[in-house]
Amino acid sequence: MNLADNINNEIKVAMKAKNADRLRALRGIKSAFMLLQTSDKADSLTEDDYQKALNKLAKQRKDSLEVYMQQNREDLASVERAELSVIEEFLPEQMGEEEVRKIIEKVITDAGLSGPASMGKAMPLAMKELNGKADGKLISSIVKEVLTK
Image 1 (spheres, rainbow, N blue to C red):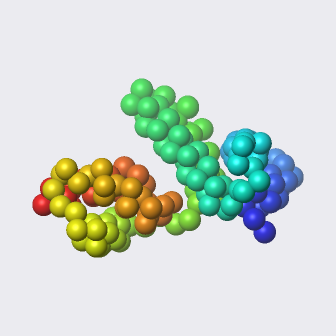
Image 2: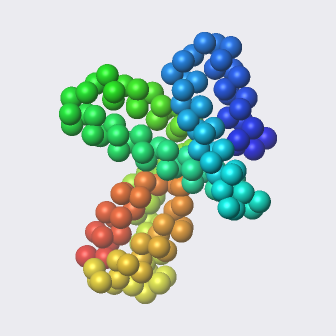
């Protein structure tokens, strides 16, 4: 069963259970998927495209949550937190900092990169290797740290 079908089934379950918070998050995911399906590349959609859409939704929720926490808006933050937890159920498990560091060090060593000037070359390589497995901010900070050693 692909991810889009899985989301549709989860929507049915949430409706039957009358779980409004979960239903809202699942409908948001379905909306993002429907936008993908009506885009120019709808003929060639893969599971990876759906995962990227989920990653984008998760990042949006994290950014909004951060802003709401800074502004002491717990009412809005709790909504974002609930939606983020539902979205994360469908994302692959995120790697820990040490695992990410090992992979980045290997990528940088294999590419023969060194110094802060290589950041522009190292980031695409690291992002390709760690696509969807780690947060972009974490990857960026570790790449920067490794290159400045």
